[in-house]
Length: 193
Image 1: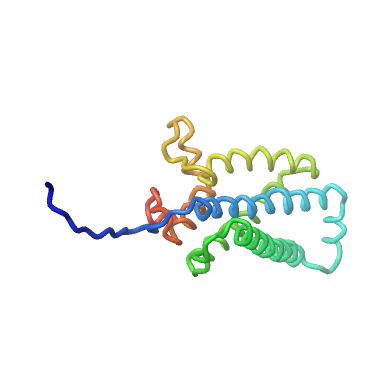
Image 2 (image 1 turned 60 degrees about the vertical axis):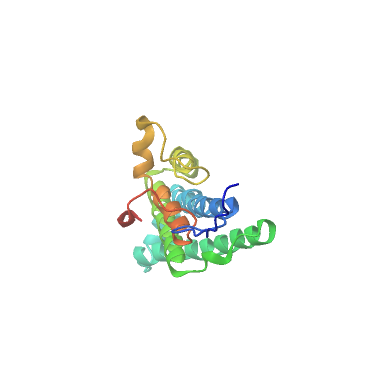
């Protein structure tokens, strides 16, 4: 008979218990934050331009920078509410881990919120009305969403579209969020997220 061998198991650099819901949660959170910026702020700015409200506001003593700051702060408050709603739903329905409550994860959430606002301002700036903003938002958002490592790993994708994975901010945000809670070591270099 074979001798009995004693061994110990130790996981290095990742969780010993991988839960797909924790991996998926970061992707859903990035998607929710970006959709609020793309479709909320972008459409708001475009509608204000189309209706002439922006010109009327700029003709008052209110500085344009203050007005844009108010739009951005409004969207940041909404994004905080989005984060709370997504987390509560994930916790109550899917029992998402509490490991997201660390500083590095929140920095990535803040970066995702700021990127979302930046894309919303871009979409609103290049759009003439809310319908155009929705079209531009969809044209940018859906490729970014599906090639952004949100729902499934995309690092082994065909070289013809891999370039888009590497220029997509969603890729780095979701990978950084997952890496910060020890779910998966990011295949991206550490300085990139």
